[in-house]
Length: 153
Image (cartoon, rainbow, N blue to C red):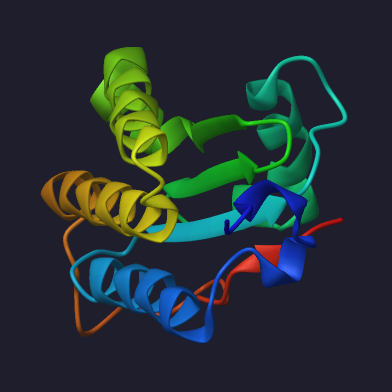
């Protein structure tokens, strides 16, 4: 039996699943000036995954986007914890309910062992919200942060 939770952080996903997640980030960001990052690690060093996401946010320079519209999707796979954290620019537009719904949607996928699909779908929904509030402007938009998945320990 395949045991997703015994793998190292970098081995949680197949190359195809990594491509699915990365492609969803790139697709979402083509429609907005916002930035989305996905951080995957084995264990959460905190009881609350949101606290860990908040700690990682500045370490990933996500607070330095021009419009403060970066969003971090955090997953600690072995600990079965996750969080979605948005910077103040996007948070003031969508509020806590949006983030809570994003987590609930990921959990629904994770409960069916559709981890990569769950992350990709939530990234797309985040992209839709960013597009609504921070639409893409070809004259001014730049990719402020890398689109790759960040793997912790």
